[in-house]
View 1 (cartoon, rainbow, N blue to C red):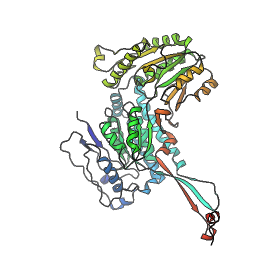
View 2 (cartoon, rainbow, N blue to C red; view 1 turned 180 degrees about the vertical axis):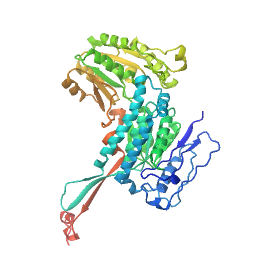
View 3 (cartoon, rainbow, N blue to C red; view 1 turned 135 degrees about the vertical axis):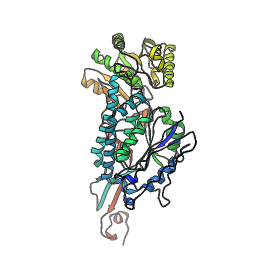
View 4 (spheres, rainbow, N blue to C red; view 1 turned 90 degrees about the vertical axis):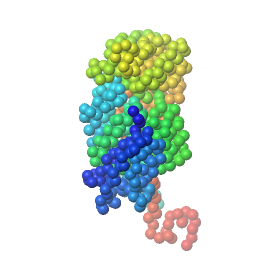
Length: 529
């Protein structure tokens, strides 16, 4: 199958009439004859619309046409200006844009969209099929939170000083690029599109090469929900060429990437030439510390969910399990007993508990790290092999794997595997556990299991990560920020913090005195009249 480059043109704000809607165009990246896109018919009253399609399309097309093998060719008006239209900062229109995104996400509940997510993401089990719907709920809730919090960033007057009127205003950046990963394509796209549109920006989404369908479907539904032509664009294809072209383009003002730390470094390098605003949500090797007062059942369940959710293919997975030395054997034995009860198989089977990993390449990565762990002396307490035979030969299945008696210097303990592999590291006291937890280049998430609330919360403040879970794992809130420390990223996604990431802040200071002789600064600078 040839890779596709697709642009879905959608602009933000007032609902277009049917004569103004431009259908999405599809073109092959491999070349060949393309059907020309039909021109957009614009009515005489459209010049005052919030986005003003011609300026938006001119800037957008200048960017998109520089992407390798991109063939969509609607021509902008020759009178269009690439400058950003200040009309887009109107709060009522931005609120309407978020409302339209919410409506589009609600439509993702349909059976076709549910099956798309199950098939595309290789959703792992019956609970995670429910989690696919939860992804839609979370995206919708996050958008609603943005809608509720949006007025707070419109205008903030400062206390008066001298005869001055001084205030702050949030303004759009312009064209933003979102690059989403293959493991959570819908929720990642939602976390980028909603705040970008909410703050009045245009957005180009680049989904992962192996999971473009849900993002394209979301764009289609957004168009149906009333998001007009020119703002929401989806381009598919290889990240190395298309993602790089977008990140390095001079007309792009903001790049938001969710991906590995290695890819983040490259996108950062490409964006540096034009000093763009950036949000990077990158890799992790998150610690989960079980304290000596922990409830054993809670520790077992938390330790399992930390590394088995979505087959460990989550950036914040807790795959470094620090356990008091005296509790290691009992904890690992309890986890193994529960793993034996799991049904591993076809992710479309309602009885399945764990499905395959996403691709052959990811399977090979997991097997390579397991081999490294064995070579470096870690004890394989459970799993460690690819599953074969029967239906397993038709997919990329790997056993849930637990290494025990690891140390914090082993390769499989320090590097992100992105698979169902848990590394158990014994410790002797809290200080040692904390030191090992923070001894990593990553800082995305962490966890604590304890029955002592005060002790757990005190320890949580010392773990150098953007999120810390206590007696639970993987549960994030729609109204809570998400971001990493150290090499797990730059900036923050979700909720109010994301609105700041997709806007510039402008301070406006106006002297309110009536004439030049009374100007405050004249007295301060000693200017005489």
